[in-house]
Image (cartoon, rainbow, N blue to C red):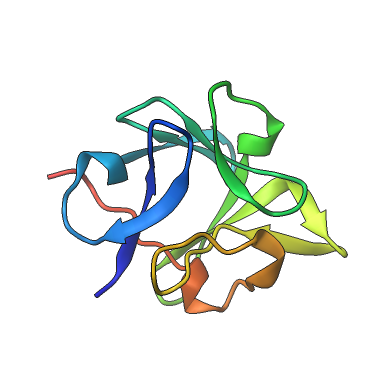
Amino acid sequence: MGVQLARYLDGLVSGIPCFPQLWGLMEIRSVSVGVVAIKSVSNGLYLAMSKKGTLFGSVKYNPSCKFKERIEENGYNTYASLRWKHGGRQMFVSLNGRGKPRRGHKARRRHPSTHFLPMLPS
């Protein structure tokens, strides 16, 4: 069973089992070509990444909320921080098998933990 990205009222970022839940509903907005902002519909927080690669919810949209979106060959999307890099390498939004966020520098583009499948709300 997969997990989906969720953000709670306190700004905690986590993964939840893949079945429709309000906390998991995210809005992906294009801010420029190939760059998106991801916002929680339930609480209005933006997904952001710190300089250390930690995911968190931000009340205000800022440069840490910009992610480079790439559609991979397998049809899944990856999201890399546009602002931060670690040792010259991109830092990716990533969840482990239990739904906990992984630090951005621990994940690579080809790793399944960085692959997300945007879906229309049902």
